[in-house]
Image (cartoon, rainbow, N blue to C red; front, side):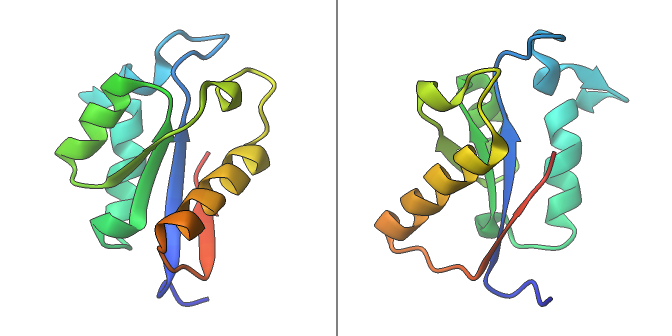
Length: 108
């Protein structure tokens, strides 16, 4: 699969039920989410990398990396929310915005 016309979405919910604020917790000197963003930047341009979150602090961090952000609806930020629900909502947003893509790749 070519990465042309691909978008990477990095789901990063604010409240983990096991580890509060885990996406912003330090891991080897940087927030956990930063590792996912940096990995994606090895393969795609920043405009094709999207952090999908309900957390304004995570959005601020993502903007420092110059990647795109999408603030997901609160209804999709629950413990029981499935990743495919998040991806469907996000893909509908991309279509409404006229952003063309062929594939969406998620990180977990």
